[in-house]
Image 1 (cartoon, rainbow, N blue to C red):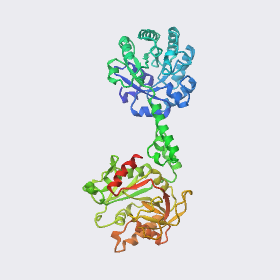
Image 2 (image 1 turned 180 degrees about the vertical axis):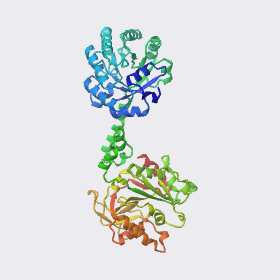
Image 3 (image 1 turned 90 degrees about the horizontal axis):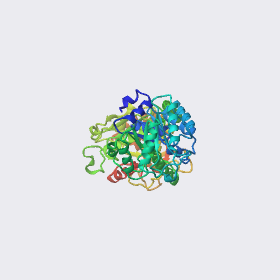
Image 4 (image 1 turned 60 degrees about the vertical axis):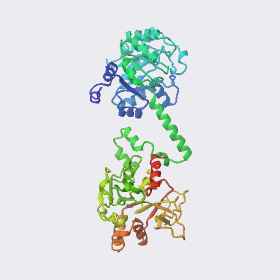
Amino acid sequence: MTDSATTQIRRTTRLRQMLQSAELEFICEAHNGISARIVEEAGFHGIWASGLAISAQFGVRDNNEASWTQVVEVCEFMADVTRIPILLDGDTGYGNFNNMRRLVKKLEQRGVAGVCIEDKIFPKTNSFIAGERQPLAEVNEFCGKIAAGKDSQGDDDFCIVARVEALIAGWDIAEALRRAEAYRRAGADAILIHSKLARPDQILEFASEWANRSPLVIVPTKYYSTPTEVFRKANISLVIWANHMIRSAVSAMQKAAAEIHREQSLIEIEDRIATVDEIFRLQGADELEAAEERYFSSLRDDTKAIVLAATRGEGFANLTDDRPKVMLPIGGKPLLRHLVDKFKKRGIDEITVVAGYKSESIDVQGIRLLVNQEHASTGELSSLACATGEFSDDMVLSYGDLLFRSYILRDLTGHKAAITVVVDSKQRDNRQTADLAWCSQADDRSMWGQAVLLRKIAAADGDTPPHGRWIGLVRVRGEGRQWLERTLGELQARPDFAQLGLPDLLNALVERGHPVHVWYVNGHWLDVNSLKDLESAGSFTAGT
C-alpha cells in the first residue's frame, strides 16, 4: 500500500485492504499517543494497540485490570494524532456478546479501524503466563460474540479479527483449525493464530492447512528469529510486532533513571535523550514557537553566533594538510558541525564562521562563511574584525574547536549581563594555556548564579593562583556591543594588533572599566588542540 493511497481512504478501509493484500503487511505496537505517532513516522501503515502494552503503561497487569473504557480512551488519543488504522487488542471483548456490541460502537466512534478478540474466558490472563492452564471459551459462545460485533458495526469495513488460543492452551492443530473455521463462518474478517513456541512449526502447519480460507494474522513474539520470507511463503497476510515499543521504552527509562540517580545530575544524559523540542514536535505543538518564547524567554530571534575558525591546527600531524582542524571528523561528523548543531539546538540560526586556512574545504550547511585572507600572519582579533558587519546586540563569540554540553550554552544565553564569559573552575592548574582566568571571587559551587567579575585572562604567572580557565565562549548583548566595538577599534590602532587574541580584547575591556561577568562551570567541555584531544573528543561526543 502506498503512502499516497493511505491519505485518500478511510482507516477502516485501509485496514481491510491490508488484511486482504496479496503482499505481506506489518503493523507495530503502540500504547499511547506519542508512541503511535512514532510508529506512523517510522513508516508503518497500521498500529497494534496492544493490551499488554496499554496495561503496562498504566502500571497494571494484563489481566483486564485496566477497564475497557480506559483502554478505549487510550485508543482515542492514538487515533487523534495519527492517520493510519489502529487494530485494538480487545482481549475477550471485555465480557459477553452485549459487551462486544457496545465495544464495537465505541471503537467506531473513536476512529479505531478494527478489534481483535481472543477465545478465552473474561477476565483473561496474558497468553504467555501459564497459557496451557487457561480455559478457552465455548466455540458457539465465541461465534455469537463475533456475530454480535459484526451486526453492531456501522461501517462495513470495520474489521473483527478472531484470535485462536488453542495452541497456547495446549490443544492440537486440528482443534485450532476447527475453531478458526467456526469463527470464519461466524463473520470474522481474519484469523489470528497464536503460538508460544520458539519455532514457527505450529504456525506454518496451521497456515498450510488453513489454505487461505481467509486472511491469516500472526504475532511472532516468541519465534522472532524466523526469517520474514518464511511468512511470505506461508501466505501470511499480516504480521504484528506486538510489544516492542513498550519494551524498548522500559529499557531506555531504566537506564536513564539509574544514571540520573547515580550521578545526581542531568549533565551527562541530557545530550543523549530526546530534546524537549522533539517532544513538543511529536505532540503536534503548532504553538511551539510561542511556547519557546514563553519558556525560553532568554532566547531571542536575533541572537547570532560568530565562530573563529581560521587556524590550521598545528598538533594534528598530516591530518590537517588539506583541511583546517574544525573539519576533522569526530563521531562521524566534522568538529565544526558539532558546534553549529549546538547553536541551532538553542535556536541560534544565524551563525558566521570566520575561516582562513583551507577555507574552501569547509563544507557545513547552515552557516555564513567569511574568510580572513591574512590568516597566516594575523591572530584572532583580526579574524573577529572581519566579522564586524555581522555584529548584533545579542551575539555569542566562540572558538571553533570547542565541544561542550548543551547546558553551558543554555545558561550563557540566559545571562543578562552586557558581556559574560564562561570560566571552568575545575581547570586551574593548566600551565600550558594562556587562557587562565583571575576573577573577583572563586567559584562557590553551593551558590547558584554568583555575581563574579573577570579581572584578567593570562598565562600562569607563578604568584596568585587563577580561579579557572576561560573556555572560549563570550556572550555580548545590549550596550556590551558598543563597548566591544569601541575597544576593538582602539586595539586596531596598536602596532601589534595582528598578533592579538580574544583574551587581549577581554583584558582591554576590563582595563577600560567595563564589567565582564563570569559564569562558572565545572568541566563538561573540551577544546581540540592535539591528537590526544581528538581521541578524547570521540568519547565526549558519544556521551561516555
